[in-house]
Length: 496
Image (cartoon, rainbow, N blue to C red; front, side, top):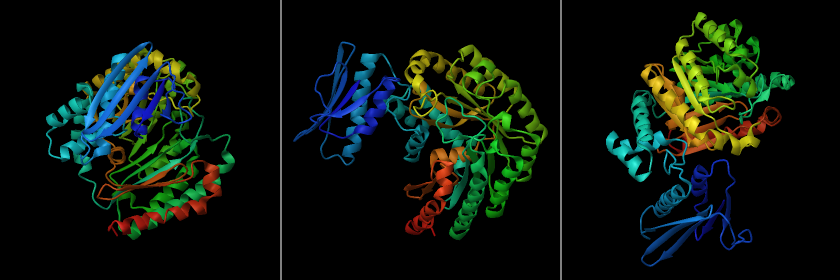
């Protein structure tokens, strides 16, 4: 499929929306009249903008599998948010033309962003009732009633925790870019710890240095710690003494007892043992993740996980024995080799364990993952079944007392679905809500971590750490110079 821009440059949103209709297929973008524009395409989407005295005419004309559709709209020239209105109108036109051609009706309508609940909450903040906001989602953004109801439910469930975030609140994120093995679906910056062992001591030493520097900045600025989240990678891929080294640095640099929540992703069951759980407990960790993704052994083997379903259950019971009373378990709908029956079986077994949190992800196939070459076939073969998995999980979990409390979307997700966190009442993850709704600063340390500075005006500035452990080590001083922008951001925004 070729997407053609004629008379405008609203590229990003239109490309994102087109991919909802042609998942797994290549969408090539060209600008009309450039050398790349051959002018002769078997399948194409032509988006044209013509600004005249009476207003701006937007036209979408599409051809696919021998059929053609056209849609047109007009935007006043003098409207205040001209570019926004043109982009939105193009989105609706694309949706109408492409849904007629393909028979695909994306459940999130024309919304392409990763944070639909944040947009829903903005409508509430503008004075709309939940019913009015739902109607706006369905009529203006073409979101299905089921998804608008989900957004409304989550917005309500977040209300209490969002009220705990103030002007000078912040959260701390820690990144451990090592895993015992690389899952085939993973596109994160994580390395097999057995192959990169020589990097670990220097990495941990410098990470502790960055932790201490972040703590000094937070104290200098008078910031208030809200939550701590240690992710990756797999933080528990290192030894118990190495894990203690990091957690001790956190305790020395931050008021851990002030945090509403302190999470460590002990995500891989084959990295969990009694010593590591004891280290976390003594450090004040209040919440951990034990992530099976699936409890079907054949699927675990297919995705490159070197543990069994039985090990997941054993790790869960050990964590309970060690006193952890807030445990999250992640599941993925759409894993290669899984079936609706297998997913239902996994969910039933997880619910029987009784974790306080269950996060249901929809498989996202990134080209940088080991499964990138299976991109098209995975999408086309499983869309209906994966949708059924996600719907089944939502119904079963909500009926069982787990309520949805945060949601985000990713590119290249099967059926363009979402990832949702469900929790028992009072066990919602504060950090997950804070980072998804972008209500306060996230100070982030470690390879691949991104510090996100948030001003009360909504202005956001990001500071990126180097992605790979060897870069992080070799260019640490250069990276730390960037972190001076944390203090200047607060000064320039009148927050110091």
